[in-house]
Length: 378
Image 1 (cartoon, rainbow, N blue to C red):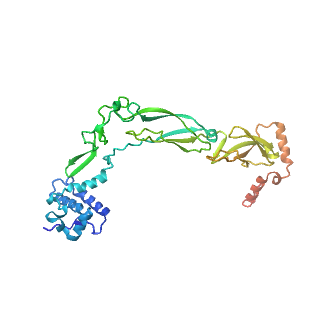
Image 2 (tube, rainbow, N blue to C red):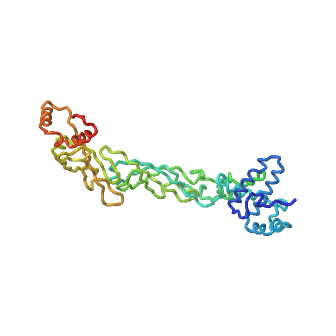
Image 3 (cartoon, one colour):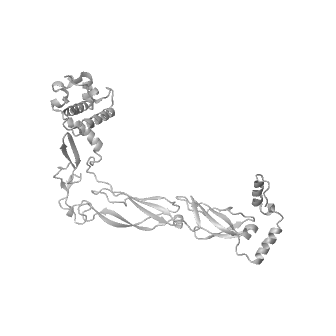
């Protein structure tokens, strides 16, 4: 019986690239695998043929020979890919796909190189004043540090690790399961290829110990909420004397009782007496550095009106200048008036000569309303 064309067997065209070949092979191998078809001799036979086809077509030289001579290229021992009848290991092709699909879950490839330590995160809350001036606080960070007893090697008394007897230094072991050859991380050495006969009594062979560090941190003036500060080399110690990770400090700024921050600028809402708002005058307001600033209030000031104080805002990170501070006026209506005060206000109202002159916002509002409601009365 004539052998089926390899391309037809995989269901691909002759110009199919490697990605298409892999996808087609993977699908067929999964469908025809004997574990999914127990006792099905036809499925087992097709599984072997699919593996044989993929083993030839995935190799550029074998594929070129097959494209030119067909199956004859591998008959009588030629080409080294004569299928299962010529000693072909049909499991090897599937092992490539299995390693690609599941290698991530079985530990990947072993590396004897030192491993960098993990990065650490530290959350810190500071005041708005600290963000303005800058600060150099001390913090205590729990971390994994290099063991002083063994200098990070994990071995007692400076002894050197020896070759793992389970994997013979490979870091991985293989097991045959039916048509599968499964490779996984060596359980004895955890993929390192070497084991410690006499582990360090201080770190129990890990090369690292839990320790709390005290660090001085520089918070520069002008930092904003959410700023991240990197402290190089202050993360966890690396494995096998690898370099340490970094420490990242994430800043959050507490809300302030007086000031609201928007970028480099500050806003302060200040109540202004009715008389000062009407007649004009001056008030004193606090500043972020702890001082006072004088603000001139013009006659007729209204609630919501803003007054700008240059260079009285926040520090700007890595800059010499500062933002501005804005005073938001809130005209305060007096309460608990005396009898005489009420009389004076009534005299003021009756002597006003109309709202248009002394209360322009009030007059303008109702003038616009009257356009839609002619019979409105004040």
